[in-house]
Length: 454
View 1 (cartoon, one colour):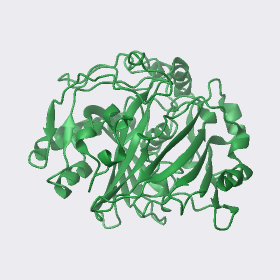
View 2: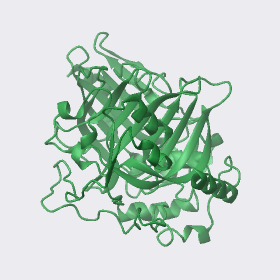
View 3: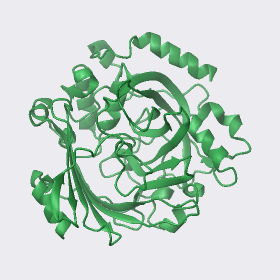
View 4: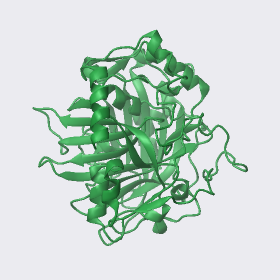
């Protein structure tokens, strides 16, 4: 903890005020691809060698892989280095979050962490690196941090000056240009019983389109469009959701619509934001928990605490495999720990504290963001009594066909109810399709109505 405090202090002194957004100079930007990776992570490994240098990530998929497959493990020979349990987790407290430590206390007989060697597998297309380099010297926050300007395709702030810039990097990390996917979620009871909720989802990301210009993005003010249809169980089938996410969220807030099968009509849904309960989540997650964090950041004060080394889920190909069934994953209290791979990585630490005069069921959230991908890997969440409330973890893999690092499963643990929700279960479905043609016409209220009636 002393080491973490020293790192935090050094970064705070170097960056100055956490409320100032500034473009970096050309000299600073030249570090990208030399001292820093093209997306802004430290290129070098750590002092003891437990985190290696980044050498480009996965640039070629494993032999035999073809697009459409569930992604095979590129590191099948890796062995467990050590296992952390309730009996020894205190020995590793410096590389665990308070929330992770609380999971050992809550489930002392079953929760564990199998730790493997660190593989810095994150990789992205060259054009994403090129656009990130351009963004570094031009991108800015606007409207008090509730929007961005002069950013397109790549990471907007690869050399961040404050917590808001880091969280925007997460929200705008590259995930391709469009994707259709089948999958679902489950929220097991404390005893392990669950109902599987199946979705069809589609996502179009104008921000990530190769060749997109920030001028055109700012004209449309659209970052992405998302559509979700419930396929099962029967009592919910046909319920649908449409979201248009904006670049300047003060100029035009998020727009959302829902289709209700009982009423057979589309309605505007202004409450699909912030701490409104997530779709059929049993109250175990908020709307802005989806993708670990999404939406407007305006209800929080964001502080860049610093950087630290942390054990996070990474290269979770075993958990992603189509040879694994949902019953093997979903266990009482938490997912099956034998399917989860943890590695030590450097993460940015960002603290979000609820602003005075605003409301949210979460008073404080501490985000731990992987430096190589800008994916929120772990989040510790506190209630209005300042007690740990929930712990979220994103289980990441490299999607070779893009390539890009993205979560294959997101799990939010509710420490108070001793339940959890697992989102993104796709083992028994066909793999994501990043090539299916989608158009703006697929993301209108009339398209939502058609989807709901099918």
